[in-house]
Length: 336
Ligand SMILES: CC(C)(COP(=O)(O)OP(=O)(O)OC[C@H]1O[C@@H](n2cnc3c(N)ncnc32)[C@H](O)[C@@H]1OP(=O)(O)O)[C@@H](O)C(=O)NCCC(=O)NCCS
Image (cartoon, rainbow, N blue to C red; front, side):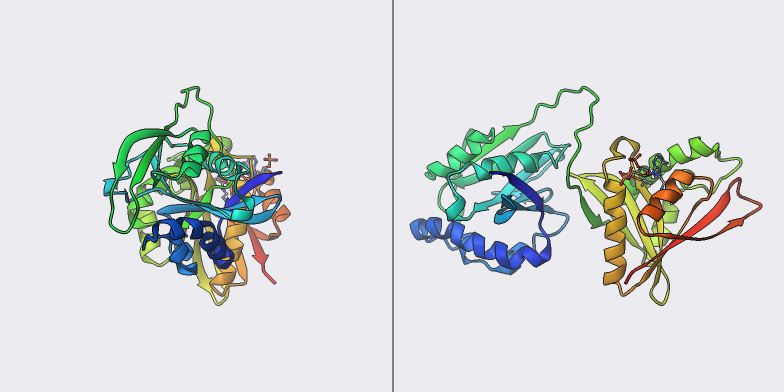
Protein backbone atom coordinates (compact mmCIF):
# COMPACT_ATOMS: atom_id res chain seq x y z
CA UNK A 1 0.00 0.00 0.00
CA UNK A 2 1.58 3.28 -1.13
CA UNK A 3 0.38 6.46 0.55
CA UNK A 4 1.16 9.72 -1.24
CA UNK A 5 0.12 13.36 -1.14
CA UNK A 6 -0.09 16.10 -3.73
CA UNK A 7 -1.17 19.75 -3.52
CA UNK A 8 -4.93 19.92 -3.98
CA UNK A 9 -6.18 21.62 -7.13
CA UNK A 10 -9.60 23.23 -7.59
CA UNK A 11 -10.81 20.46 -9.91
CA UNK A 12 -10.54 18.01 -6.97
CA UNK A 13 -12.93 19.99 -4.74
CA UNK A 14 -15.92 17.88 -5.82
CA UNK A 15 -14.43 14.51 -4.99
CA UNK A 16 -12.81 15.79 -1.79
CA UNK A 17 -16.05 17.29 -0.48
CA UNK A 18 -17.79 13.94 -1.05
CA UNK A 19 -15.02 12.11 0.80
CA UNK A 20 -15.15 14.73 3.57
CA UNK A 21 -18.93 14.23 3.98
CA UNK A 22 -18.57 10.45 4.23
CA UNK A 23 -15.60 10.64 6.56
CA UNK A 24 -17.22 13.06 9.03
CA UNK A 25 -20.73 11.55 8.95
CA UNK A 26 -20.05 9.25 11.93
CA UNK A 27 -18.77 12.19 14.00
CA UNK A 28 -21.82 14.24 13.04
CA UNK A 29 -24.20 11.43 14.00
CA UNK A 30 -22.53 11.31 17.40
CA UNK A 31 -22.39 15.05 18.24
CA UNK A 32 -24.82 16.75 15.82
CA UNK A 33 -22.35 19.62 15.89
CA UNK A 34 -23.35 22.43 13.56
CA UNK A 35 -19.75 23.19 12.51
CA UNK A 36 -19.13 19.63 11.38
CA UNK A 37 -17.33 19.43 7.98
CA UNK A 38 -19.91 16.80 7.00
CA UNK A 39 -22.34 19.68 6.46
CA UNK A 40 -20.05 21.53 4.07
CA UNK A 41 -19.71 21.36 0.32
CA UNK A 42 -17.13 22.08 -2.38
CA UNK A 43 -16.83 25.73 -1.38
CA UNK A 44 -15.32 24.64 1.94
CA UNK A 45 -12.42 23.09 0.01
CA UNK A 46 -12.14 25.87 -2.58
CA UNK A 47 -11.94 28.70 -0.05
CA UNK A 48 -8.95 27.00 1.58
CA UNK A 49 -6.90 26.78 -1.61
CA UNK A 50 -4.89 29.89 -0.87
CA UNK A 51 -1.68 31.08 0.70
CA UNK A 52 -3.09 30.99 4.25
CA UNK A 53 -3.43 27.22 4.00
CA UNK A 54 -1.76 24.21 2.44
CA UNK A 55 -4.28 21.66 1.23
CA UNK A 56 -3.09 18.20 0.24
CA UNK A 57 -4.97 15.44 -1.53
CA UNK A 58 -4.22 12.03 0.03
CA UNK A 59 -3.85 9.02 -2.25
CA UNK A 60 -3.63 5.33 -1.50
CA UNK A 61 -2.16 3.35 -4.39
CA UNK A 62 -2.91 6.39 -6.58
CA UNK A 63 -6.63 6.51 -5.65
CA UNK A 64 -7.86 9.67 -3.93
CA UNK A 65 -8.98 8.68 -0.44
CA UNK A 66 -8.93 11.91 1.59
CA UNK A 67 -7.54 15.35 2.28
CA UNK A 68 -5.39 17.25 4.77
CA UNK A 69 -5.27 20.98 5.37
CA UNK A 70 -2.74 22.96 7.40
CA UNK A 71 -3.29 26.61 8.27
CA UNK A 72 -0.09 28.66 7.97
CA UNK A 73 -1.20 32.11 9.13
CA UNK A 74 -4.02 33.77 11.01
CA UNK A 75 -5.37 32.09 14.13
CA UNK A 76 -5.99 28.64 15.57
CA UNK A 77 -8.80 27.92 18.03
CA UNK A 78 -9.91 29.54 20.14
CA UNK A 79 -8.19 32.74 18.92
CA UNK A 80 -4.43 32.16 19.18
CA UNK A 81 -2.18 33.76 16.59
CA UNK A 82 -0.27 31.26 14.46
CA UNK A 83 3.30 32.45 14.94
CA UNK A 84 6.38 32.01 12.78
CA UNK A 85 7.39 28.33 12.71
CA UNK A 86 3.88 27.28 13.78
CA UNK A 87 1.25 25.40 11.77
CA UNK A 88 -2.27 24.35 12.64
CA UNK A 89 -3.48 21.03 11.26
CA UNK A 90 -7.06 22.12 10.69
CA UNK A 91 -8.54 19.22 8.74
CA UNK A 92 -7.78 15.52 8.12
CA UNK A 93 -10.20 13.07 6.62
CA UNK A 94 -9.93 9.63 5.08
CA UNK A 95 -12.90 7.86 3.51
CA UNK A 96 -14.36 5.22 5.91
CA UNK A 97 -13.45 2.40 3.46
CA UNK A 98 -9.80 3.33 3.93
CA UNK A 99 -9.75 4.09 7.65
CA UNK A 100 -7.82 1.98 10.23
CA UNK A 101 -4.87 1.45 7.86
CA UNK A 102 -2.57 4.20 9.19
CA UNK A 103 -3.09 6.20 6.00
CA UNK A 104 -3.82 9.47 7.84
CA UNK A 105 -0.78 9.35 10.13
CA UNK A 106 1.50 8.44 7.20
CA UNK A 107 0.05 11.26 5.12
CA UNK A 108 0.47 13.74 8.00
CA UNK A 109 4.17 12.81 8.19
CA UNK A 110 4.54 13.27 4.42
CA UNK A 111 2.90 16.71 4.64
CA UNK A 112 5.25 17.79 7.41
CA UNK A 113 8.20 17.54 4.99
CA UNK A 114 6.60 20.38 3.04
CA UNK A 115 7.18 22.73 6.00
CA UNK A 116 10.96 22.87 6.45
CA UNK A 117 10.57 25.93 8.68
CA UNK A 118 8.12 24.21 11.08
CA UNK A 119 8.93 24.15 14.78
CA UNK A 120 5.47 23.36 16.17
CA UNK A 121 2.31 21.74 14.82
CA UNK A 122 -1.04 21.98 16.62
CA UNK A 123 -4.20 19.97 16.16
CA UNK A 124 -7.49 19.72 18.06
CA UNK A 125 -10.22 17.08 17.92
CA UNK A 126 -13.23 15.88 19.94
CA UNK A 127 -11.73 14.80 23.24
CA UNK A 128 -13.40 11.41 23.36
CA UNK A 129 -12.52 10.36 19.80
CA UNK A 130 -10.09 7.54 20.52
CA UNK A 131 -9.38 6.89 16.83
CA UNK A 132 -8.20 10.48 16.29
CA UNK A 133 -6.08 10.39 19.44
CA UNK A 134 -4.27 7.25 18.22
CA UNK A 135 -3.79 8.68 14.73
CA UNK A 136 -2.15 11.88 15.99
CA UNK A 137 -0.09 10.03 18.57
CA UNK A 138 1.30 7.72 15.88
CA UNK A 139 2.21 10.84 13.89
CA UNK A 140 4.21 12.08 16.90
CA UNK A 141 1.71 14.47 18.52
CA UNK A 142 1.16 14.57 22.28
CA UNK A 143 -1.53 15.88 24.59
CA UNK A 144 -1.08 19.46 25.85
CA UNK A 145 -3.67 18.76 28.55
CA UNK A 146 -5.60 21.80 27.34
CA UNK A 147 -9.23 21.43 26.29
CA UNK A 148 -11.38 23.82 24.30
CA UNK A 149 -15.06 24.57 24.59
CA UNK A 150 -16.43 26.33 21.54
CA UNK A 151 -19.94 26.97 20.37
CA UNK A 152 -21.11 24.37 17.88
CA UNK A 153 -18.40 21.81 18.63
CA UNK A 154 -17.89 19.06 21.24
CA UNK A 155 -15.17 19.49 23.87
CA UNK A 156 -11.84 19.48 22.04
CA UNK A 157 -8.45 18.12 23.09
CA UNK A 158 -5.41 20.13 21.94
CA UNK A 159 -2.36 18.16 20.78
CA UNK A 160 1.07 19.44 19.88
CA UNK A 161 4.11 18.21 17.97
CA UNK A 162 7.47 19.91 18.40
CA UNK A 163 10.04 19.52 15.66
CA UNK A 164 13.63 19.28 16.80
CA UNK A 165 15.69 20.10 13.78
CA UNK A 166 19.36 19.59 14.43
CA UNK A 167 21.14 22.69 13.13
CA UNK A 168 23.35 20.62 10.83
CA UNK A 169 23.22 23.04 7.92
CA UNK A 170 21.44 20.38 5.84
CA UNK A 171 18.48 21.87 3.98
CA UNK A 172 15.15 20.08 4.47
CA UNK A 173 13.84 19.75 0.93
CA UNK A 174 10.09 19.92 0.30
CA UNK A 175 8.80 17.62 -2.47
CA UNK A 176 5.89 19.72 -3.71
CA UNK A 177 6.42 23.41 -2.85
CA UNK A 178 3.47 25.66 -3.55
CA UNK A 179 3.23 28.61 -5.94
CA UNK A 180 1.11 31.66 -5.13
CA UNK A 181 0.90 35.26 -6.33
CA UNK A 182 2.80 37.42 -3.87
CA UNK A 183 1.39 40.35 -1.88
CA UNK A 184 2.90 43.81 -1.67
CA UNK A 185 4.21 43.21 1.85
CA UNK A 186 6.10 40.15 0.60
CA UNK A 187 8.08 42.11 -1.99
CA UNK A 188 11.12 42.63 0.28
CA UNK A 189 11.35 38.84 0.76
CA UNK A 190 11.00 38.34 -3.01
CA UNK A 191 13.72 40.90 -3.62
CA UNK A 192 16.03 38.98 -1.32
CA UNK A 193 15.31 35.73 -3.22
CA UNK A 194 15.90 37.40 -6.61
CA UNK A 195 19.12 39.13 -5.58
CA UNK A 196 20.57 36.05 -3.87
CA UNK A 197 19.57 33.78 -6.77
CA UNK A 198 21.07 36.02 -9.45
CA UNK A 199 24.26 36.52 -7.43
CA UNK A 200 25.49 33.15 -8.78
CA UNK A 201 24.96 34.49 -12.31
CA UNK A 202 26.85 37.70 -11.52
CA UNK A 203 29.72 35.65 -10.13
CA UNK A 204 29.77 33.27 -13.10
CA UNK A 205 29.92 36.10 -15.65
CA UNK A 206 31.99 38.61 -13.65
CA UNK A 207 29.15 41.15 -13.43
CA UNK A 208 29.64 43.94 -10.92
CA UNK A 209 27.82 47.14 -9.92
CA UNK A 210 30.46 48.95 -11.97
CA UNK A 211 30.29 47.01 -15.25
CA UNK A 212 26.60 46.03 -15.08
CA UNK A 213 24.71 48.15 -12.52
CA UNK A 214 21.29 47.08 -13.80
CA UNK A 215 21.91 43.36 -13.48
CA UNK A 216 19.13 41.52 -11.62
CA UNK A 217 21.45 40.71 -8.72
CA UNK A 218 21.57 44.45 -7.90
CA UNK A 219 17.91 45.46 -8.36
CA UNK A 220 16.20 47.40 -5.60
CA UNK A 221 12.73 47.21 -4.11
CA UNK A 222 11.42 50.08 -6.26
CA UNK A 223 11.78 47.80 -9.34
CA UNK A 224 9.46 45.19 -7.88
CA UNK A 225 7.06 47.79 -6.49
CA UNK A 226 6.82 49.48 -9.88
CA UNK A 227 6.22 46.13 -11.59
CA UNK A 228 3.45 45.31 -9.14
CA UNK A 229 1.80 48.66 -9.68
CA UNK A 230 1.93 48.05 -13.45
CA UNK A 231 -0.13 44.90 -12.90
CA UNK A 232 2.60 42.31 -13.46
CA UNK A 233 1.79 38.83 -12.21
CA UNK A 234 4.38 38.07 -9.54
CA UNK A 235 4.73 34.59 -8.07
CA UNK A 236 6.54 33.12 -5.10
CA UNK A 237 7.59 29.51 -4.62
CA UNK A 238 6.83 28.61 -1.01
CA UNK A 239 8.42 25.96 1.20
CA UNK A 240 6.17 26.29 4.21
CA UNK A 241 6.08 30.01 4.90
CA UNK A 242 9.50 30.61 3.36
CA UNK A 243 9.84 31.97 -0.17
CA UNK A 244 12.52 29.97 -2.01
CA UNK A 245 11.84 30.92 -5.62
CA UNK A 246 10.26 33.66 -7.68
CA UNK A 247 9.18 34.74 -11.18
CA UNK A 248 6.98 37.37 -12.79
CA UNK A 249 5.02 37.76 -16.00
CA UNK A 250 4.23 40.98 -17.83
CA UNK A 251 1.74 41.35 -20.65
CA UNK A 252 3.57 42.63 -23.71
CA UNK A 253 0.89 42.42 -26.35
CA UNK A 254 -2.06 40.47 -27.60
CA UNK A 255 -1.49 36.92 -26.33
CA UNK A 256 2.17 37.69 -25.56
CA UNK A 257 3.74 37.65 -22.10
CA UNK A 258 7.34 38.07 -20.97
CA UNK A 259 8.80 35.96 -18.16
CA UNK A 260 11.13 37.84 -15.81
CA UNK A 261 13.45 37.10 -12.92
CA UNK A 262 12.87 33.34 -12.82
CA UNK A 263 14.85 32.34 -9.76
CA UNK A 264 15.39 29.50 -7.31
CA UNK A 265 17.69 29.96 -4.31
CA UNK A 266 20.91 28.05 -4.97
CA UNK A 267 20.42 25.68 -2.01
CA UNK A 268 17.11 24.50 -3.53
CA UNK A 269 18.31 23.98 -7.11
CA UNK A 270 18.59 20.85 -9.26
CA UNK A 271 15.52 19.10 -7.88
CA UNK A 272 13.00 20.36 -10.43
CA UNK A 273 11.69 23.58 -8.83
CA UNK A 274 12.82 25.70 -11.80
CA UNK A 275 10.85 23.34 -14.00
CA UNK A 276 7.86 23.59 -11.69
CA UNK A 277 7.89 27.40 -11.99
CA UNK A 278 8.30 27.23 -15.75
CA UNK A 279 5.37 24.81 -16.13
CA UNK A 280 3.28 27.00 -13.86
CA UNK A 281 4.11 30.06 -15.96
CA UNK A 282 2.88 28.27 -19.11
CA UNK A 283 -0.44 27.41 -17.43
CA UNK A 284 -0.73 30.91 -15.97
CA UNK A 285 -0.21 32.46 -19.42
CA UNK A 286 -2.81 30.12 -20.92
CA UNK A 287 -5.32 31.05 -18.23
CA UNK A 288 -4.58 34.75 -18.83
CA UNK A 289 -5.49 34.25 -22.48
CA UNK A 290 -1.90 34.24 -23.73
CA UNK A 291 -0.18 31.93 -26.19
CA UNK A 292 3.43 33.13 -26.24
CA UNK A 293 6.10 33.55 -23.54
CA UNK A 294 9.19 35.55 -24.38
CA UNK A 295 12.35 35.57 -22.32
CA UNK A 296 15.70 37.32 -22.48
CA UNK A 297 18.85 35.61 -21.16
CA UNK A 298 22.60 35.93 -21.12
CA UNK A 299 23.36 34.32 -24.48
CA UNK A 300 26.73 33.02 -23.24
CA UNK A 301 24.92 30.91 -20.61
CA UNK A 302 24.72 27.77 -22.73
CA UNK A 303 23.41 25.60 -19.88
CA UNK A 304 20.52 27.96 -19.25
CA UNK A 305 19.77 28.35 -22.95
CA UNK A 306 19.69 24.58 -23.45
CA UNK A 307 17.48 24.19 -20.38
CA UNK A 308 14.87 26.53 -21.88
CA UNK A 309 15.13 24.72 -25.21
CA UNK A 310 14.61 21.38 -23.44
CA UNK A 311 11.51 23.00 -21.89
CA UNK A 312 9.95 23.81 -25.25
CA UNK A 313 11.42 27.30 -25.91
CA UNK A 314 12.87 28.23 -29.29
CA UNK A 315 15.89 30.49 -29.71
CA UNK A 316 14.83 33.53 -31.73
CA UNK A 317 17.91 35.77 -31.86
CA UNK A 318 20.62 37.78 -30.11
CA UNK A 319 21.49 41.44 -29.63
CA UNK A 320 24.60 43.21 -28.41
CA UNK A 321 24.12 46.36 -26.33
CA UNK A 322 27.06 48.71 -25.67
CA UNK A 323 26.13 49.08 -22.00
CA UNK A 324 26.02 45.32 -21.29
CA UNK A 325 29.15 43.15 -20.89
CA UNK A 326 27.38 40.12 -22.42
CA UNK A 327 25.22 39.29 -25.44
CA UNK A 328 21.45 39.30 -24.91
CA UNK A 329 19.76 36.14 -26.14
CA UNK A 330 16.04 35.74 -26.81
CA UNK A 331 13.81 32.70 -26.66
CA UNK A 332 10.12 32.13 -26.90
CA UNK A 333 7.57 29.44 -26.14
CA UNK A 334 4.33 29.02 -28.05
CA UNK A 335 1.41 27.16 -26.49
CA UNK A 336 -1.02 25.14 -28.56
C1 LIG B 1 17.49 28.70 -13.78
C2 LIG B 1 17.04 28.23 -12.40
C3 LIG B 1 15.76 28.95 -12.04
C4 LIG B 1 16.77 26.71 -12.46
O1 LIG B 1 16.35 26.29 -11.17
P1 LIG B 1 16.41 24.78 -10.69
O2 LIG B 1 15.45 24.65 -9.56
O3 LIG B 1 17.78 24.32 -10.46
O4 LIG B 1 15.80 24.05 -11.97
P2 LIG B 1 15.51 22.51 -12.19
O5 LIG B 1 15.95 21.70 -11.01
O6 LIG B 1 14.11 22.38 -12.65
O7 LIG B 1 16.45 22.20 -13.41
C5 LIG B 1 17.84 22.16 -13.22
C6 LIG B 1 18.50 22.40 -14.55
O8 LIG B 1 18.58 23.79 -14.80
C7 LIG B 1 19.60 24.01 -15.78
N1 LIG B 1 20.33 25.20 -15.42
C8 LIG B 1 19.88 26.42 -15.75
N2 LIG B 1 20.76 27.34 -15.36
C9 LIG B 1 21.77 26.72 -14.77
C10 LIG B 1 22.98 27.15 -14.19
N3 LIG B 1 23.32 28.42 -14.16
N4 LIG B 1 23.80 26.22 -13.66
C11 LIG B 1 23.46 24.92 -13.70
N5 LIG B 1 22.33 24.45 -14.25
C12 LIG B 1 21.49 25.35 -14.79
C13 LIG B 1 20.41 22.74 -15.83
O9 LIG B 1 20.05 22.07 -17.01
C14 LIG B 1 19.93 21.96 -14.60
O10 LIG B 1 20.01 20.58 -14.81
P3 LIG B 1 20.72 19.63 -13.69
O11 LIG B 1 19.98 19.82 -12.41
O12 LIG B 1 20.57 18.27 -14.27
O13 LIG B 1 22.14 20.13 -13.60
C15 LIG B 1 18.14 28.46 -11.32
O14 LIG B 1 19.36 27.87 -11.77
C16 LIG B 1 18.41 29.93 -11.01
O15 LIG B 1 17.73 30.52 -10.21
N6 LIG B 1 19.46 30.49 -11.64
C17 LIG B 1 19.85 31.87 -11.39
C18 LIG B 1 18.87 32.84 -12.02
C19 LIG B 1 18.71 32.63 -13.51
O16 LIG B 1 19.67 32.47 -14.27
N7 LIG B 1 17.44 32.64 -13.95
C20 LIG B 1 17.07 32.57 -15.33
C21 LIG B 1 16.93 33.94 -15.83
S1 LIG B 1 16.55 34.00 -17.52
